[in-house]
Image (cartoon, rainbow, N blue to C red; front, side, top):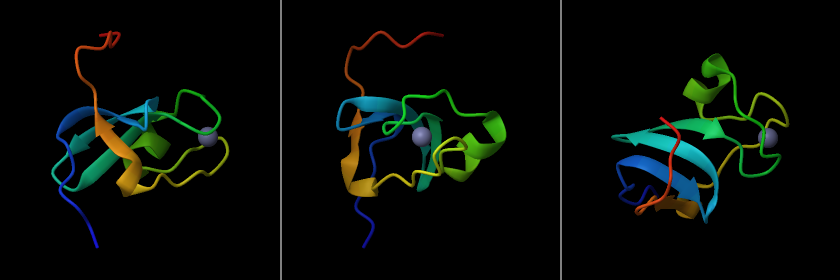
Length: 69
Ligand SMILES: [Zn+2]
């Protein structure tokens, strides 16, 4: 059921921030509550604040967006 994910920096339909490595998704910023995720939770792809689990269908690549380094 997995579609091909965009690699690297991505958002969830323009919200939140994630990084995709292969089929592994690291959720940096939650699209639901906009909280910056703790590294441990981010690595699981689940929000440590509101337990939101993102839909892979919502993942969109970040194009020329300002991503704080
Ligand atoms: Zn959240």
